[in-house]
Length: 289
Length: 323
Image (cartoon, rainbow over all chains, first blue to last red; front, side, top):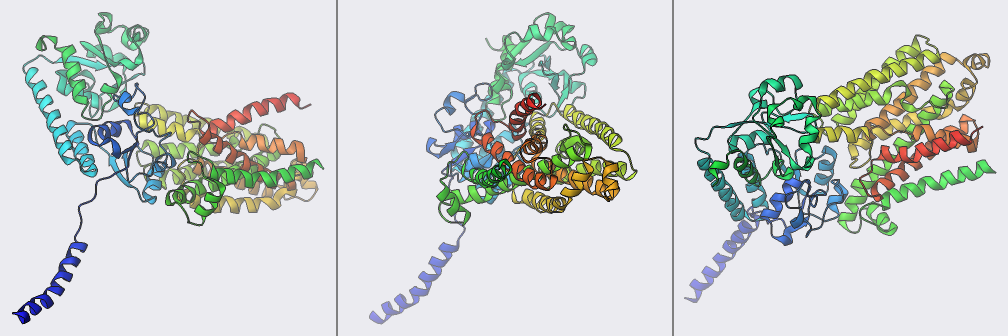
């Protein structure tokens, strides 16, 4: 018996060594980021929604500006980047930095060389893009469960809104601004129209992306409602009336101008569902008793 | 006495500005930490900030300032015109059009593309200038060609800017590039800019005597034994090359090439053998100091804005006080 035990003991030594090596060499699940810096307002929103407060090292330099951020008040509780350059980011010693496709190439290169992990948000035109971004960032933060819950909540609100708007006659709308540009296909405004019971007359006319407003053709489009960001000020209608492009539009003459909160209109995150709901309420009030 | 004082001032200002550029920024680092970080020791974040972020920025700042000031000296002597500046012959505008073109085409995300496109644009402009110089065009005609070339290239840049005005991020990138800046400079920018700028400066320094003679007028220089055509071509090529390289790695930075030569001419006299190296040092120190200001002052100031804010009032004062 003693001999048997001795044999088992001797045989088990290499087995233990093997097991230890196998465990040590096995690809471990990446540990959640603990000090995350967000370099853009869009990623600020996602970080605030998904991270534990202790995981947030700093938010973007526009994060506390109500003109850009929906969560400006919440963001005030966290440190803020002074600028979007690499030194400003590295000051917070991050282990993960959230950047966007429009972050400047040299800044990205410097951050990569500093050995910091980056997550780049590249697409945000549609809700599917938003869901993918939520899941990616949620996984990096170790909060995939929160990410899935956020996606489900957003999806549920989108489905509910679609059910509410079922069968409505879409309203023909146009995005207007004193900046002489409008939004066509492949823009967040188009996504807003698609979900709020609206037809974007600029897309209908073949405009793609953010394009300059064609003064003369505009009259032939004849939108029923004009939509603008409230960041342009409450006197926007008066200022638009001074612009030849808009002056003759029946919608503007009749005062059919809807102002939506600027950060909501520009949102590239799950908050855009709030923009869908806000616009739908304005365009189809009869469906929201 | 005054000359010696100015020389000592320059010799001490340049290293001081360089050290300030390494030590000052959003993260305050004591000089001892900077020295340690340069050797790769100490806090790893400080090492990254000093070696990877600030050192390329400081080196490029110094090189760009030296290049623009040297180019300004050559232009002012060559055209015998106090208002001549490095961008006079359209080289900065060519670089701007090259850089803005790749940004507008959406290929500006690769690290090399923007500076290389800027160099390509500047070289096209330089080639046009050289063709005019080779055909024996007089100084006045060269100057007018520069005005026309500037207008043409600026129109191209303005067109690309207006065509992309709806893409806000892109418009911002283009405008930032056009305002000049040294933030986020990398080893690639150092490789593109510094060896060529140093080489061009080294080739330019021995031409101080020729510049002295040419600034007397071409006929006088010819009678004193200068091969005016050869020297003219060499001066134009080196000066435009310096402007092209500086613009490719830092965007359009104004006033350094205009103000520094004037300032130093007032204190050192018109001898270009002294003025050229002094302007290189002065330009480097001024650009570094202005860059440090962009980091410390609030409001996200750009380098080109600070150099204009410093240079503009000084230039006006100088015009008022000069006889």
